[in-house]
Length: 103
Image (cartoon, rainbow, N blue to C red):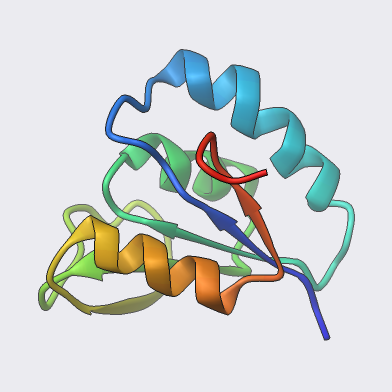
């Protein structure tokens, strides 16, 4: 099974939190050529990071029919009604979670 890394972002998510907590762990997982990252459209910094690096093995989860932004050519998964619902789904579908909520 290929690794699926969920990036679950809290409501207090900031660029500093991304750089300090998420980025080192993301870079560790990017070594695997088949690693997939899943994240929500809630904070554009996450999509922008993968887009700028040219990393396309990502799925962006979003509310409703379309994402808040379209920063990369990522696969989309939508029609969720809340970011809490997205977080629960991403946790269930991942092999690893990066988040201050989960160890």
